[in-house]
Length: 317
Image 1 (cartoon, rainbow, N blue to C red):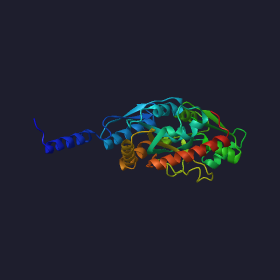
Image 2: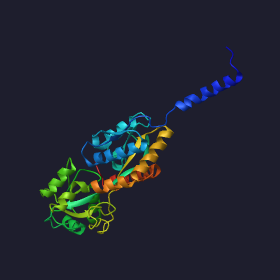
Image 3: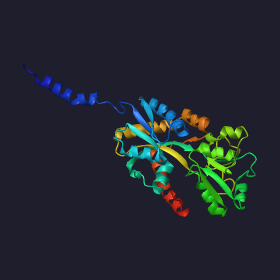
C-alpha cells in the first residue's frame, strides 16, 4: 500500500491536533468546598448557597464538606495538604489565618494557600437583657467602672476584642465568660448570668424583635442591615470594630487554568445580587466581593495587626 505525501501530511497533522482536541477544560468533575464548622450553623448555610451558585457558574457540581474541629484549623490543615488540582477548595477565615495561627501551633503556613477571593463579611453586635440599665456603649463603660464591672459572654476571638480594647482605653473592669457556642452565650444574657454578649445578628435578631433582648451597638465598622437605627461602637465614641471576613482558597500550586477559572467564578458569584440578597436577608451580613489580590493583601495586613493585638493585650490561648 502506497501513502502519498499529501495523505501522510494529513495524518501527521491529525496526530498533532488530536490530543489537543480531546483535552477538556477545567472543571471536568465535581469540586469540593471544605468548611471549618459543622452543619446547621450560619457558616454552613452560607457555604451551601455559595456552592450552589458557584456550581452554576462552573457548570459542575460543588459539594460542601464540613470539617469542624480545632478552632477552624483542622479544615485549613486538610486544605493545605489536599491535592493541588483545583478540585478541592475551602473557606478561608480571616481570624483563623491571621489570629489563631499566631496564638497556637497550627498544621499550615500562610503560603500553603492560593487565595481565590472574598466571600462574606460577618456582622457583630452587642446585646443585653431588655431591663438592663445598659442602653449604649456609654452605659457599658459606666458600669465597667463600678465595683461589679461588666461580665461579657463570648465564644472567643475575635468576639472578645472590643471588650479588651475598651478595657485598655477606659480602664474599666471587663470580665470574660467563654461559652462553647454562640447560642449558649445568648442564653446566658437572657438568664442574666452575664451582662452582655457579642455575636452575629442571626443568633439574636428574633429575640430582639420579640423584646427578649436589647441591641445596644454594632461591633462592626458599619450599622447592621437588620438594625440600621443602632449606631456602631465607633459612632458611640470609641474607635473599635471587628473584621470578620471569610474568603475562599485552594492549596498552593493549582494549575493556572483552574486558578483563573475559579477566581473569575468566585468573584462573579459573590458580586451577584442574588447572593448579596441571600446574605442580607438570611443572616444580616454583607457580601465581600474582593479579588484574590485584594483578599491576599487583607490577610497580610491582618497578620501584622493581629500580632500587635496579641502582644498589646497579652492574649493567651
